Length: 281
Ligand code: AMP
Image (tube, rainbow, N blue to C red; front, side, top):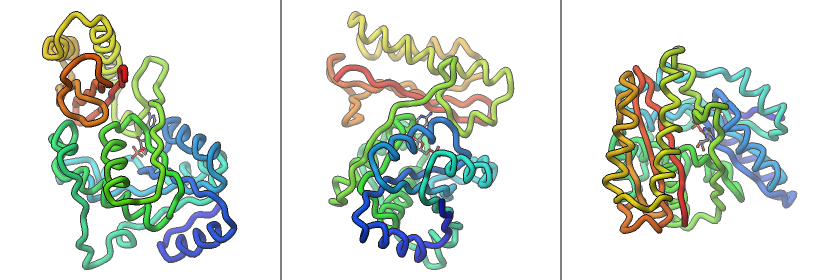
């Protein structure tokens, strides 16, 4: 396995691989790898001949009051995991490599970023889309793998790739969870014992929501209200949003028969957690 830090060296490596006619699978991450990331690597290994993982905590997707500085990092451990999982190349650029002096170009994906995390974290998806577009231009993968854990991100990246006519398949991969249902996340590390226990309410709420939707008795506003009340039973948790949207357009659904996403975000102490589930379609 190779670790490369510069864009010029990655481009050379990628050219060699492409010249050999190999397909490239790409998994972008912010590191501190867990089973969720590893499931994407596994998917990439299954369908591509050469797998590239990027590890980069992208400053442009964090707001000024967010956790960029303290985001968990452990590059040595991450490299060991990548090696174990059969990754071919790990791209670990420094911030100044990705955003050199004078950098001035940002991507704005409209409308689908007006809701959910886009509404709550201004500028977040501008940063995500920009860094992912840069990675896709640098790594030139045939296929890129994203987790459904960050569902809006997946929709944004699919939109961007289609709108900018990039010849790359974007594959969404299922959410990997802890035994008690909590979605695996690098940020779970921030939770103390009491917070960790309370965090299971997110998955619990999704399951309740799924049941209420499948029962097909209550209206969407009533279901949302009921889910909010359910989440509020954990008083240490501060709800950011509880939404039920069309899973493709992220617009308000007209009926319960559409493919729907229940999306949740909440803060427990200083830690912001998100989760979602897809129903129907
Ligand atoms: P991150 O390092 O948090 O930016 O995540 C990198 C990629 O891993 C993104 O595509 C995430 O959606 C995905 N991912 C993170 N957590 C999970 C999880 N629990 N299950 C599946 N994919 C995940």
